Image 1 (cartoon, helix red, strand yellow):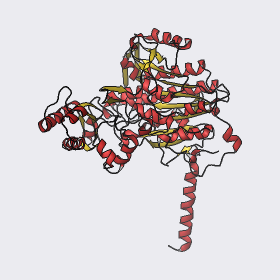
Image 2 (cartoon, one colour; image 1 turned 90 degrees about the horizontal axis):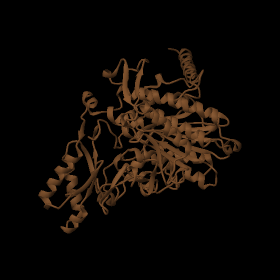
Image 3 (spheres, helix red, strand yellow; image 1 turned 120 degrees about the vertical axis):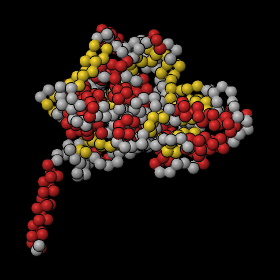
Image 4 (cartoon, one colour; image 1 turned 180 degrees about the vertical axis):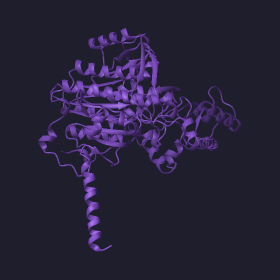
Length: 558
């Protein structure tokens, strides 16, 4: 081939490549560097920031089920997920870089930008060895529940959170902003709202109504508009909800789940909250809250944080590849569209004045049966039986102890030791920890283990384990000894779960859409802790004190 022909072919190849790249709009792929903002654009704040968290929403739900989403813009108005994906900065595989991904610490990181070791929320629940009792992440006896007679003696607030949120800092900067958080789960709403939220509400599944606590409602009464909403919900109890679709599935759910889809639920039951019933309750509450508090209509930016918990409730029961999860994702798409259309009408300037963030608190592992069918080693681990076996071995080695045994409590593979017995028998705590580690490493499904002694001595498991331990572990709150399971091995509390730092648990989508955000698909590394500093930058406020993320500078511009 002569030089002239080679040059011609190279020119045609280059032209084809440029044509291909140009066929992607700026709303699909980010190619060039964003143009810098003028000071006028930068100082123009959004009227409303909406933070959407879908509980247990794996990163691949958006990529796998995209063909079934509403168009970004249709005759009736904007869509849901596709509206965000095409009009926002989209990181398909953002990460929570922590050791154990779960609801409470996952929600904390979104608006604090802090890792668990700094926020002091490492788990949903931990064991206080000194007081010998379990502690729930939003426990607060001084903040009784408002709106539920059955919750007497129980209180909830963000007092255990040892840092601030973007909403806290926004109010601290002097703005007359309103900050509101909503979620079916108390821990989700409370940790998104932070310390200075005007209101956080969550759902009482037993009494089927929205409730809060005296931390937010000192007078002990629900707002009249929330009472009215609860009365409407109460009228629906006892009815049957039929969940069905005539749309063809993607073919990416379990093969056994393909074809016609129909499920039925009794409204008023906890089981119904796993379905579109729970999604609709959340969306309706968000719309009513925005209307009642006139969010986005004041002189300062407001924040509305919404956690969709139904996805997690169903996901634990059926796993990420069940048809229910595909249909639930499609239903969430329709609900987001409904929410966006309402905000487009109620906020001055419409959605052009609204900054929207979509992400998740964690992902989830595939169910064991599917892993085994795919020729992977996988199993459920009976944690209680595991603790029993280890206690028996410890008794053989060190003798019996009264009451709870050598391991006083265990939670999510955190093992809390009987310090009193260790001290009374004059044992070396370090040697005792090492003995438990040896016993754990003999168990099937155990990748590695470490102790509080290893943490202080910096003799931790290598690679990503060490990094994740340092972002997550808190001596005295996490277990004295912790076990890290092998990939695809998990606790047997549910058919599907999440509590590791593996990709299926830590990778979630991140989309930011709105004023001063340059649309595109971004392959840069992004972490969930990047959300808080990015929002703080866009708001022109100091980020929360323990923030560790970065400003996502590549998405800011015209």
